[in-house]
Image 1 (cartoon, rainbow, N blue to C red):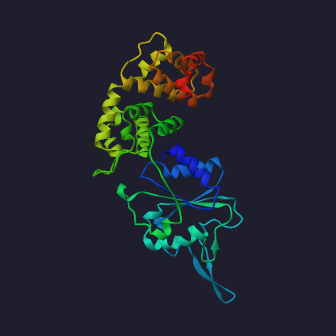
Image 2: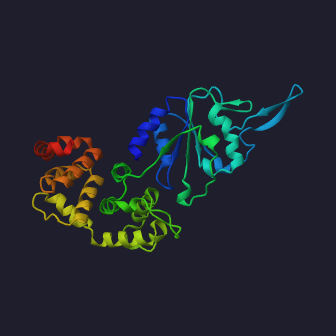
Image 3: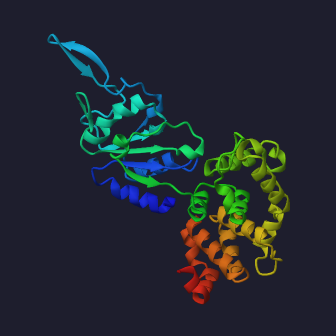
Length: 328
């Protein structure tokens, strides 16, 4: 299930009583998805790492009251009187079987011993898959049967929309447009491998060093040797800032490259700088000069970067002639 669909499904499931479990490889954004929904709904999140718990942690410790032992629940669990929120059980299948057993009652009955989860709180869990070489324990059928299970699958279009909203450098966005298979790689013998999270790290490192050339020896330790070699080669051949600024200065007369990778860099760069009125105006004029399929990508990206792009004359002309592609 791709992230945009999973987002819709998970938010809908929050309105019923059955807890949800998100399965997916490391680094794809499972936790971020839950926190994003919580922010959208203005809900607090109690992020509970099940792998760090002991079997007795959820029940709490006993205290004597009126000659009887009562259990004092841990402070990290939501208390009665708090506004509704999400209890997020992350890395639940990385917890040992005894800890998983202590979660049975909380997940199904919304209580542990004398503690009861307040009304309005939803339970969402997440975990990595065994085939991803992550630390996992087999989840018992008794616990698994208590969840609605959702599979998180990476999707290049969803990731691109996220990347544009989070200022991922155009080189990374353009490269993955050409090599979408490298958005998510299977873990290998190397400690580093490509994931959506590691590409975000690459973007941050490139920005910090100022160029790919300045950090080329760091990149294999983020995305692995193979992906790093391809990305560095792509960056060497990509259009430079001065070339892209020349297109902004003369969108109707500047030479537009024909190569696929260079066009991806152009569309990504313009979207990255889309809030700049001069860039937006040039992008609108450029739509008629790009291959239609890339012009559609640029138009959609520019609209996400700046909704005011809809008022540009070049966009209106493109919409009139290629509206079926843009709205399809």
